[in-house]
Structures are given as structure tokens and as C-alpha cells.
View (cartoon, rainbow, N blue to C red):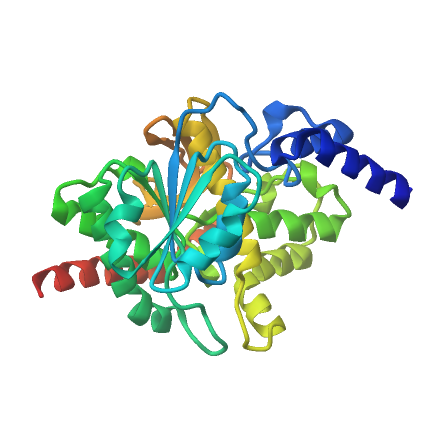
Length: 371
């Protein structure tokens, strides 16, 4: 069977030499309908990226492309046929990353930018993804991260506001609960803020919840969906397992265990790497899924995702919930419904921490703008 499968892959490679065709073969083999492909509601994780050859020309930039998230993310974006131009920016080493990724035989044209080439990197972009910053290390809190990454994000977002004011921003840099408000306040100060276009990437929380739920209950993860709301740190991450599909009974112990593991997923990876890294590969995967959905929306195929955005769903001005992505970014932010008492308590518990993080971001942006 292994030899036979290998021969099939060789034939596919010789026939097409493209990610799109190989992905179509995977879809056919798994009998997954193309309409279900994507990272949104009920999507199949193995079928990830768009393959349409008729997509508009889309320029995507990765700011922080030389890092642990940025490099694998850049590779995954190179495999996405919706991307025609891929701009990779970091303070050093990016031309090498661009040369490496650029050798992949897919259509996106890749160019690396360093130091003072930020404006050129983002100019003309439809989508700018920001994983730049330092990763979390053992014993490091989100507040520790904030002190370093806040300034980095502010500088990058200001460049986007100046040179690509219409671009959609996907913020990955932690702490997302604070960096998204920082990005929004910076753009407001510049007079170019559009709440539809600033999104915190919380897809990894959804990916983890799906994975852990499927593993615990012996489900095919390709058919699993789990809503995750709130923020993107610890107790602010609230998976709604009561609304998971397929619906499988959970004991209270199982529910609490799954919730805690989803909330502490990042810490689990940091500890497993013995302090030598954080969640980079899974984060790159999740970010690529979300970027794919954003591009699908831009190209006229609305998609449903969960994202941390400007919101009036709760008392928090920024909140992660289900959103509809379309041609201008976030077309609709959906409210919360059918939550259990356990989930309502989780929502209530998270609010002080979430509000503190949001206010820290807003205060930082306002104070730094005075300097």
C-alpha cells in the first residue's frame, strides 16, 4: 500500500507539479466537497487552501517573516493560489527566507525586505499579517510580552496605515488581547481606521479545541467544529463545547479538562519544548487557515470564522466571536446564544482580565502617540 501510494504521488507530481492539483487529489480521495473547504465552520483541516486559478491578483505581506511563525506561515501562503505576490519583511535575514520559499513551484511571486524597506513591503497589499515580536518563554506572562511587543506592533501598524491604509490586518503578535486595541488606536489616530479590517487571529484556539475534543471522543477531526469566544490568553479563551459538532456527551470532568487544556494550549507547547520555543508551527497553520478565509471573502466567497475584533457583543470593546468575512473584511459580528450556565460563568470570569488587557493596549497607544 505504501509503495502504491508513493507511485500515485509521483504520478501526480509529474502530471501537475502544483499544490492545487495535489490538494484536489486529496479532496477526491477523501470525498470532501470543495464547498466545505476552508478554516471556517465545519471545515476540513486537511483541505486547507484555495485552488481557483481565476482569483484576482492579491498581495499579502508577512511582517516578521524571519521568525518561528513567520517562516512556516510564509511557506503555507506560497502554497495558496489566491496569493499572487508575497512580501516577506523582517529586520534581518528575510531575503534568504524569500529565496528559499520562492523556489516552490507555485504562482505567488516572493520578495524579501529588510530594515528600511517596510513601506515598499506593505505598499499595495490587500492583506498584512503580523506575527512579529518575541515569543513567549517559560515563566513569561502576557504582561511581560506586552512590554516588548507593544512597541513593535505599533510601529508596523503605523507603516501599514501610512502606506497601505486599505489593507486588512491580521494580528498574531501576542498578547493579542492588547495588540489588536493598539493597532486600532494607532489607525484611529491616523484617521484611517476601519473596524472591518482589523482582526486578531484566534484560530489556533479553535484548532486546538477541535483537536482535543476529537481526540478525547474518538471523532474524525475533519468533521469536528467547536466555537471559541472571548480573547486569546488563558481564562479569556472560552471554548463552547456545548455547541460542538458532532454532539457528544461530556461529563463535567471531561468538560473542565477540555476547557483547561484549550486555555493552556500555548503553555503546553512551551513546556514540551523545554523552554526552547513556543507554538510556532501550529500557529502558522492556524494563521494560514484564517488568511485563506480572509482572501476568500475578499474574492467574493463569504466565509465564517472566529476572530478577535471591534465588537459590541459584550461589554468588552474587543471580543472574539463568530464573524462573517466578505469583500471588505468583517461584514457581520454575530452575538452569543445558547450558552450553558458553565459557559456563562466562564464569560463572566474572563471579563476583568480581558478588560484589563484591552485598556492596557488602548492606554499604551494613546500615551505613545503623545511622545
